Image 1 (cartoon, rainbow over the protein chains, first blue to last red):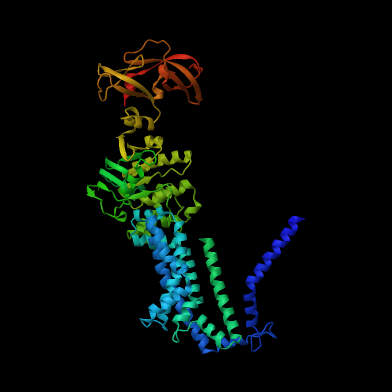
Image 2: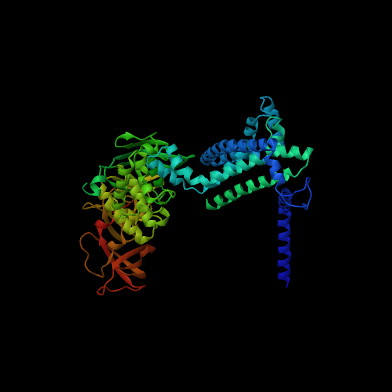
Length: 259
Length: 367
């Protein structure tokens, strides 16, 4: 009997926790399909009105495109640098590896607001505030730790003899990287790239400081919208963002299990 | 096209190690190794783990840089030459097959690095597969093959580009006994067919004895002895080699002198004769050794000239199929092992019996 009530109790608790976690997402999704002219729950009727509003708004679309291409460039930079860094880390002697790993992962550990303020002051001097280049540099720095951790995990499962075998068979160090190492750590590299994309695409704090008026990303645009005029467009944008992120995370999860 | 072997055959490389050393933070893993490996030779580096055999092999391959000494392949210094320019084949214990490539792509890998066109590559891959007796398996994934087959693929990959030197790091270590024996024979055959130099690392003395032209026994980063399997077995240079290769009996004795070209020494109250190698001063404490299968029960038969005799007590008799193993005790508590062929006409001894054993002075070595 005790076991049953215990099971019932923890089961219920579990579902409540899940509901608590999912509620905001469910709420936003439902509201995005509302036909009302203002944010209200439950919606009086359903419709695609706010998705049309989003697609018809130049400022929303511009912000979306900027976020997409900034994130794409961030992926290219942070994935290539992060992969190279992970390869270098694996070759360092143990003592040095700990120190250098700590430095590379520091953007993950230091509070974002500290980084945002620091980057703002540093970039302001070079006119990088309000420019996509500033955003790209800052986001690449935030995203690289994800690539490094993911690629390092892949490398740790790789037999070092494989690279030695490639070299002994006449492959140059570059040849052995392209033909042997990279194909074998590819899942880790792709997972790192997906996380880098999401890191940049979702990022608000640094964008608040660096966007200025010239480089308004999607999260920044949503922030501004919330402050000045609340209409259900933001719910539609949120739903689309959640969808994109969920798809990317799903891909990352599948690759991780395969790798 | 006349046969696979002639196509792949080529003269083996001569390798010279001269005073080779490798230090890791003050610890000498290899301490002054000098070996002349002849062209076409099957040389085995044999030793327990930590003896420096793998480190020595890795220096030949170029994955480790010597701290001191010289390494020559065909008279050319290899110091500073990166592994991919040394043009040697290498086989690892873990096979090290590329898991994302098929068997054929694995074997074709070294050819691709050398710019061999695809059609020619495929032809040579198929030949190499036939040479290791896996014809037609090129399309498989390495993971679909058994351990023995994977190691054959690794072998094929290491010889397909006709290197003049093949390095092997405990290649049979991960396989079971029966498969190991089959592959040992096959590697001997490949060695004979290809005529290239093999440098083979193992800790398995039986494997070393059956396969090698010469064996370098390594201990603590140094070569304890180098010679043919017969040399090492019949004339071990020191106690380490005598006990590491095969089984040995040891007699702590006192040097008395030389008679008719033989060492004469006293083991307790018993006079023993041995082959004269080095000549310690009379009165020196020495160690004599002989192999268990060279001892036999003599039971009062008159001693042949130059035969050693000793009274012992049987402590244990262990039947092991083709032969019987006796644990004996001599006066003074020295333990000995005697191996005798089993047979209907041979009387089995019981524990507690006393007996007399004899063996030839020629089978007794001063170590």
